[in-house]
Each structure stands twice: as C-alpha cells, then as structure tokens.
Amino acid sequence: MSRKSAVVIGAGIAGASVAYFLGKAGVHVTVIDAAQHTASHVPSALINPVRGQSGQVDGGALEGMHLTWALIRELQAQGYDIPHGQTGVLRPVPDDKTRAKFERNLPSELKHEWVTPAAPLRGDWAHALWLPEAGWVDGQALCRALLAASGAEIVQGQAKSWSAQSVKVLHATSHMPHAAYSADAVYFCGGSVGSSWAGEKRTHRMGSMLLLDRAVSDIPLSFGAYLSPDARADGLGGVLGGTFEAPAPTWQAPKMPLASLNWLLQKGEALADLRGVGVVGRWTGSRLSGLQAGRDESGVWRLSGLSSKGFLLGPLLAERLVASGQW
Ligand SMILES: Cc1cc2nc3c(=O)[nH]c(=O)nc-3n(C[C@H](O)[C@H](O)[C@H](O)COP(=O)(O)OP(=O)(O)OC[C@H]3O[C@@H](n4cnc5c(N)ncnc54)[C@H](O)[C@@H]3O)c2cc1C
Image 1: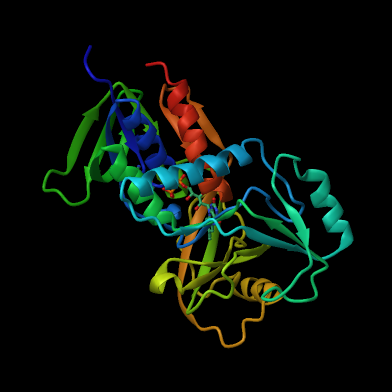
Image 2: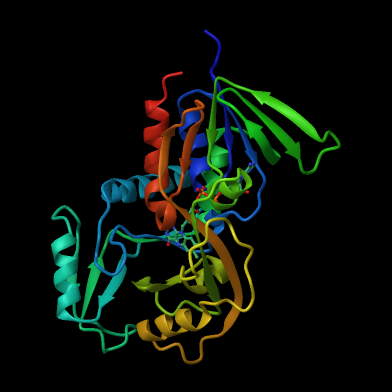
C-alpha cells in the first residue's frame, strides 16, 4: 500500500503539532507556512490549566498540560533544545470571594495548594494558588522542534486556495509564482492571520509582551497579565504579557502606542515590584477565539481558534484530530 500524504497549512503550534502526529503515524507531510504574524512565536507561553480570574479549568486542560510536557521531554530526548521551565505557576487572588470562586472550579485531580503570598509577589494579595505542574515554554522553539521531528517537507509561501485534497500556493521566495500540491488530506491551521486571509469574520484579540531585562520571578506569576521568565540572555530575561486590546472581527496590524500599555503595566505592578526593571523590547501577536477542531463541510480538516490556550490544548487537540482522521 502506498504511503498516505497530507498538506498542513500553517506552522504555529496547531500546524506543527498536527504535522508531528501525522509524521508519527507514517504520513508523508508537507507544511506550507507563510511565516508571518505567527502567534505561536510568543517568547514565553504559560502552560497553565487554571484560566481567567475565576479559576476555570477547561475539559482537556489537565490532559493537555501533561501531553505538552511529555512532548517537550520526548523532543529534548531527541536532541532538540526547547527552553522551558516546569517551575510551577503562582496565581495570586485578591480576596476570599475570588478564592471561593476558584475553589468551586478546581478539579480534585489538579495538584494545587493555597499558600501565603510572599516576595516577589506583592504583599497585598489575600491568597495565592500554587500549581506545581504548570510552567512556561518558548513557543517558537517548541514549534521548530515539532516541525523538525515531524520529518515534514516545509514550503515557505502563502496558500491561496485549498480543497479537501489540494492546495494552491503563492511562493514567497521562489521564481515560480504558483504551485499546486495534492494529497490525501488537507489540514488548515492558519491561526488569526490565516483566518482573515481566508476572508472569515471571527473574534481576534491582539496582545503584547514587554520584554524585560531580567526575570522578575523564577516562577511565573499570573492574574490578569503574567510575569514569566523567557529564554533570552541564558534564561535571565523575562516578560510581562497579556491580551487586552479590544476584540476585532479580523486580524489587526499592531498599532503604536499599544492601547493596553497602561493596563499591562498596572497589572504587572500589581503582581510584583517592577522598580529597576528595564523594558528592552516588545512582541505583539493576535489570538483567535472560537475553537474549530474537526472536518469542515468542504472536507478540509481544521485546527484553529485556540485562543489563549494554544500551548495547553494545541498538541492534545492535534493528536486527537490526527487519531480521528479516516482517510
Ligand atoms: C500576547 C499573547 C500571549 C499569549 N500567551 C499564551 C500563553 O501563555 N499560553 C498559551 O497556551 N497560549 C498563549 N497565547 C495564545 C497562543 O499564542 C495561540 O493560541 C497560538 O499561538 C495559536 O496557534 P496557531 O497555530 O493556531 O496560530 P499561529 O501561531 O498564528 O500560526 C499560524 C501560522 O499559519 C500561517 N498561515 C496562515 N494562513 C496561511 C496561509 N493561507 N498559507 C500559509 N501559511 C499561513 C501564519 O503565517 C502562521 O505562521 C498567547 C497569545 C498572545 C497574542
């Protein structure tokens, strides 16, 4: 029997994970990636199953967290360098009412502990939730490792049109302006920018990270925004990040000054003392809400709309999508 083939559009965490699991299943994979506005290149993404300001835990969040860490270990064992820290995450809460809300939402299987807020957290938090199995990862490094380990052929260019078994590409770098690829299956994983290029109207939110000259805390701190180490400067860099720009129906180019800058700084200051911390750069990305994980009416497989949980749920949903494929 001849080897099955698939084309994956997009090489963020969704597309790279799909390519990885397809490759593992013995499928010949071609990944077409425009390499533009990739939200997954976030310098430091939290792997944090407890979401928002009410402590919600999505179905699949615990499984997703364990799978993402297992993947990172598997890839590191194969020699890929993926800066990360399974350091735990500290989620301070402002008062007893918020803690009670969190407690109602936390599943018993989630390892957690309530601790007394201590430095580097500011002292005016009422409580802090310690999640020992959570942590952070360099998004770009994880995507790069997944792609390399998938064995996929990578084509840099923008897919202009596609159907269940073929994709037309506009090459960004080649003298040949158009090319067509056919395969047994096509997966669309275009994220926020790809959804807009495809003419869809969905819910997009820009978010930014301020790149700091040092990590304010070895352990990510998160409530509203987050402070986390990242991989720059031999592990000494840090970020302050969050997504607070107004939702928009399409991908938006970042506008300066950031509308959310004051909000971000206030949230960061509320978490820890930022005096003496230098801002050395900025990274802005757009995330897409409204999860799509399955086959659409045209027969194209889709993994998109991972919202703020790309690294928590992306690999798990990709594994399930590939396992559910009967083609
Ligand atoms: C500020 C910020 C902080 C975040 N923090 C976290 C966090 O702490 N934890 C977490 O889990 N998640 C976090 N996220 C969310 C996470 O980044 C996203 O959920 C995830 O990256 C989405 O991945 P994706 O693969 O769907 O899309 P993307 O990463 O955007 O990848 C899509 C890729 O497809 C390419 N593409 C699109 N259309 C086409 C086409 N037609 N042809 C060829 N290529 C195409 C694009 O160029 C891009 O490279 C954060 C997001 C932001 C903005």
